[in-house]
Image (cartoon, one colour):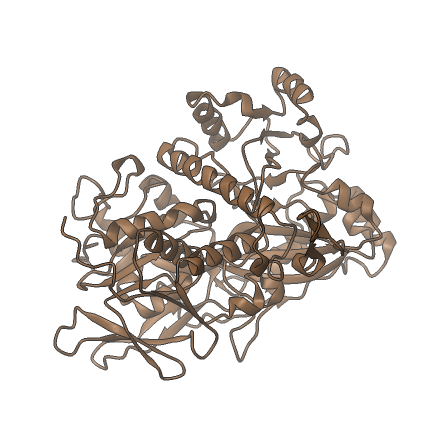
Length: 595
């Protein structure tokens, strides 16, 4: 295919999250010399973490790394490819920390740590996704990396290999908190230090002369500029400070904000929020910091997977504790030995809990610049930076379940009065119509690419995502091994007419060449459209906020505390009585308003 752009083409990338960073890095490594990346957040100041003011999914504390994808082998292969780069980045950071990064890293100088992922459930046997995962690892001759909690041979092997202590670190079976405990410890999985990874990738981009224009005025994109002669041509952008930037190619990588700028994403790409709570463990409780450290504690995934996570007390992720202090401020070079010396040890531990049980949208009316077009309804993230309402609370229905889960699973944290909740956030993902990634030219444009749609699972692929952007720019046909489908070909992607109408309201709607990675079958997609609407709690649950969004309001938020009964005795009573097999009590049911 003909390459439409030269190495000197002016390339504008909107968004400095993982899609924007990875795209910039791959293009710069390929020799493109004129790349500018814009973002409304000044990541030089807030260091890619919501603990310092960021509000995007990329700018997180930590993320999962996993290889398992059930029967989706193409994603498993892509995860293996990313794993090699993660390991390489980890070595570079560990043994040769650039001085420019010392004051930015938010934890110890690591990017990747294979602490393992423990996938737990309370059913007699493993759920369907888990069985498929084990089959997949067997096909790849990696079954020995998996430890089934109820397999005697696996338990024996775990004792021999040192993984046994991570098979039930919460003591759920020993404390009789579940009738059944099933699950698998995946020793290939682990922890990605998300903020460090983004900081390091940005550094690599800057070494290749990529320019970053960041901040609420100069980095905030006000609008895309189209040619008056040729409406299919984007000529550049206008930022909030009224400056114009010309571009030969514009790449939209603004995550959940992308749909605001690109109407063609309606019904395909949508902002949905998950829920995050962050605990701080004091220095005085070194026993808790040690217990929950990555050396002794895996990522615990409780009732995850699409067949289980929507249930009550399902869909929780509990991350290991890591020592949080601005790490670089405590590191100096030893001029004699050349080694880095940690002069100031971090004083506190950080533990993150997330839930994927219910995602919510925030439908807002977006005015179209063309007065002939109808206004659109788009889900716009409501974040800690969304003035005039700077939202840091979380939805009460999720809040209650997180509180209950922690009380059952981690009573030592709940009963320690010095353990504090230091942050609660709605973490806004970018969900596509089928939870897959988007890499393509926007229909009816010549030089506008969209690269987005992380759908809650893209971060693990961060180092390789930009390859697909580069291939688009250079006119290279996508590698068939990764099943990037050309939607123009009906054999690649077939969608039931009734679903197309449900999603778009237009019987004549055509996808027009959108590229997606297929993860879930449309059978599963149809099921996902039948979520229980009684769980909405004032926010409309995704998918597809454009349906039935009238009179939806943001309400029923709450602040997080341990107010079970205002006294230690009441908390202790709940710790002893509650189990993970409990059904919702009457108080929980009151939190589910009917629409």
